[in-house]
Image (cartoon, rainbow, N blue to C red; front, side, top):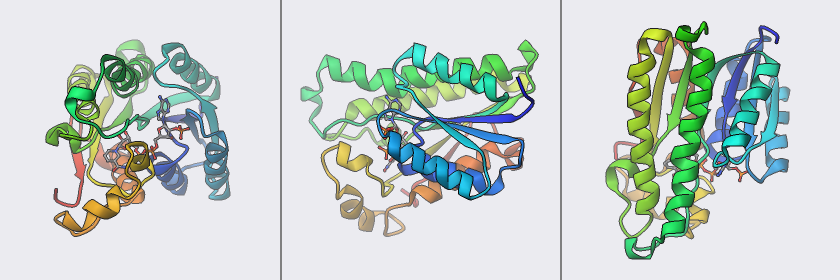
Length: 252
Ligand code: NAP
């Protein structure tokens, strides 16, 4: 193991994850290395890695379905080979087609929770075992990406997704309190309507354009605006912040 500082970022192939990787590169030191994951878009992930390298950073992409605990374990084994884990961003999430609650079947709930809750819990577990001073670790920071949906419930769209984000928020808070004495900060961001391709997965590619003008700030947010909050929470500037959520939702 080297003494290089490793940041693991899930879902780095597009949207908010890709923006976070690119912004990370702008403040990375030569001993920092970014290990980003993707599920299916290998070419997009490779392009993000190339952008990080072009900006002077070091990065590597690894395929991982966060719903598969063995694949999540593999990511952290790779992180160990690269250096010492200092940060984790749980950004990957899945969103299925807009539907009424009565049409959300059991298998769909399973899929959504497997990725958005169990995947996050598993990654947090691996990270904390490495970072916690209780296990001889040097501390670190975790940021979990929630959604305003956790508070709004997403009726007639995806109550399953909203409920998964509420669970993510509770696990974030509980974990933060457990590891606060051991040098590990655990926080979250809560994006509102952000202009990414995720809305197409929900069946409405134009959702951000439709809903943006109705937001308090009169527009949808950008992936870069969410990335800025994530990187602030990871940074020493947020050294006394844990168990907290930053709303990046234009006042919504
Ligand atoms: P996105 O453009 O759909 O990107 C999702 C990323 O997650 C992709 O890199 C994808 O990988 C990866 N991913 C999805 N399922 C995965 C799985 N099972 N295992 C591993 N990786 C997986 O989404 P986004 O809009 O950037 O959203 C990023 C985060 O912000 C999510 O947590 C989302 O819930 C949250 N958020 C977004 C909005 C919004 O309006 N966009 C609002 C609130 C919260 P591949 O591309 O390789 O499949």
